[in-house]
Amino acid sequence: MTGTLPIKQATPVIYPSEDGEPLAETYDHLYAILVTLEVLRQYLTGRQATVLGDQFLYYAQGFPRLRVAPDVMVIFNVEPGGRDNYKIWEEGQVPSVIFEMTSPSTRNQDMEFKKTIYEQMGVEEYWLFDPRGEWIPEQLQGYRLRNEVYEAIADNYSTVLGLRLAVEGKLIAFYRGDSGERLLMPEELRVAWQQERERADRERDRAEALAAQLRALGVDPEA
Image 1 (cartoon, helix red, strand yellow):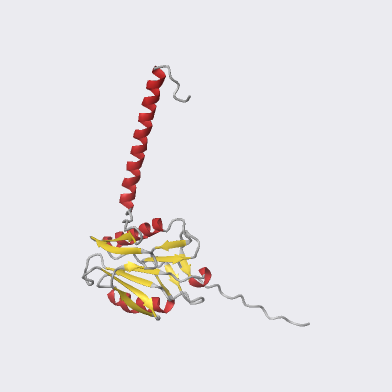
Image 2 (image 1 turned 135 degrees about the horizontal axis):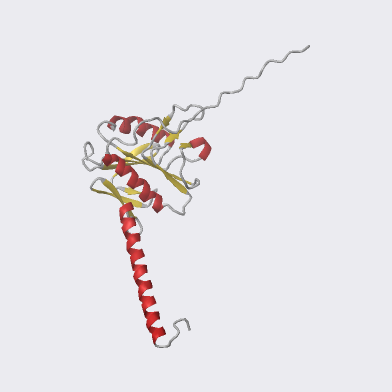
């Protein structure tokens, strides 16, 4: 009788989506992440792109320890929407732009380890934002990949996004490169939406009042 050896099943590789670490070091850093994430998400609505915040970015298949968690990353030519994590070999695209909200405690990692990893990945632009101005006096410093090496961006203009970046207090403000129009931040969007709704309500009330007056005169406003 011929025996057969049992076939060992390969152990599936697990790629965790969280590590129990806090999202950000301080409220200022957290708020800067959330606002940047939402402004860029709104800006890229309708395009084949996604914006992710504080999700693991896995860059080596089969090696789940080889990962980083960018504060905000923009990836083009992928399906829009969120992910629990991002695996480059599954999506087929490397992030085009990455933002890190930096501080003195993360300075070395941001300027050495992450900067080197992002260069090697081919991330076109890398932006460091120091909300409190603790080690970057101007608070904002960008880098653009050129000949596989990052060079400082002098004018704070993102050629990848088509946006000019500026510092407003402890946040990054974004201006369209074509029109100079400033992109609204989440609270400003809420206020603008509320004002538009109130304007529409006033227009409706005026139209209804006019229709009532016409009916009182025996005129059918629908005629």
